[in-house]
Length: 185
Length: 382
Image 1: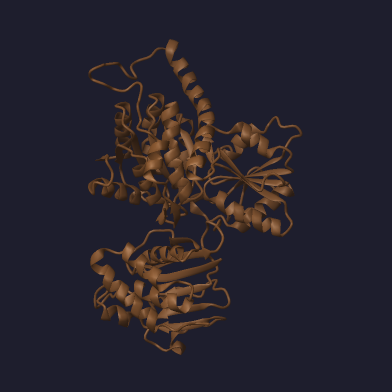
Image 2 (image 1 turned 90 degrees about the horizontal axis):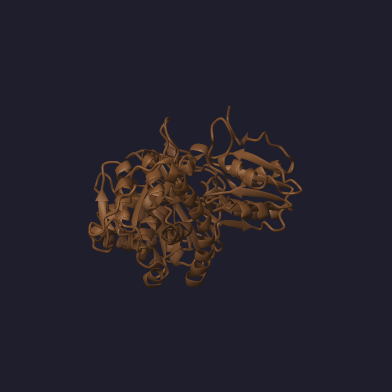
């Protein structure tokens, strides 16, 4: 069983990311479960979403306390919430930031991957200039570094879940992020 | 075909695939997405139904009853305070023998306001004469709604299909969508025998004295009794057509278990992992899900509990001034087992408090050691 946690802020699409990623993971042939943080979402407030994937049926239906992988959509969250909480040793935490790894300020027995998703989101006009939406871009980057998600399935899931007028742009940006992100062995 | 959907959308799709003809609903967290999707189906012409926007849940069920009484297949969905507001109509629906199906998302009642799961909303409707199903997965939700229409229309008793707030309503996972043709074969159009027809007028639900009312309730109870056999037949037919096996209760590694967890809703799914984990440690735990709570599967519960060292009933609900509600029902059903089987009550997960596999293993271990205050409020922080 692999558990993934996304951190974002209300309105940044953390919940929809988990649904899209779940569809991609399912198309890759895994059992999968995806859910947002259970509660009331307010725009700008810290939120989280979760994914479980496995080769076997997934029976547990409780919250995820010990993620194998973490994705942080907004670097300002690192001051607000403990994004390393319960993080299992190994795997990685991927952070959307234009800063080098030593500036991110999280430590632990895992790899920290900085990835500038905002730059790509702006380039593809995802969201607005002041509030770019980075969720699909970060999924693309995550898929590459994670290595278990087929990019074509991810692009399919994006087009399947997003409104038509923004789907293509999101898919192109996601592909670019996938190409640029590091592969982690 | 399998699709990844939330529990809420599994409800919407089920009502569409079951060809509900009238849907009257009022939105409430966490059920809102159910109604949104159904109204979209109807607006887009994908679902041949009348969608009635109503001003309250009381009206939602009243409209569904009216539609059912006129011979239509009627559906609604609600949660918590919304279900509480339907209460008067709940009695009306079953006593009028209208085979309406409701999806209820379990949500704790306020105050203080809560949107998280708990079973007290649906269990407060226990004595209204409805059939109740409790689901553990989105597949279970979809299949139970389709089955519920068939059972309800056969015995003329309405059904409530219950799913947990967030743990199912907002969780997406793969669900196998049955082919429409096969569902049509399984669930032909509803033909009510006693429907409102202006060309053939009858009186429905008029004043009835003590000489007749009593017998009508006896007949409703007989219908519940009949429902047990109908469900067993329906489950067999469903398995044959769609390849998925269902029961009124669903045991998991129960045969050789020494200690048995009795569970319902999503904890029934988590309990399977608890059982696997316990077996890895050499602890002979098993579990049984009560899928159908009304009619209560007394005989099945009794048989599955026979010979166990201990039975631990896990209740995400409470009857204030007494005990956990499933506990009371289970202990009553197994009261005359010989030799006696000790049964213990664990309250947990109220207001959406998480129930982990570890909690359930530990509850099993506590029951084995007879550590229980009947009830024990598991993990209560005082």
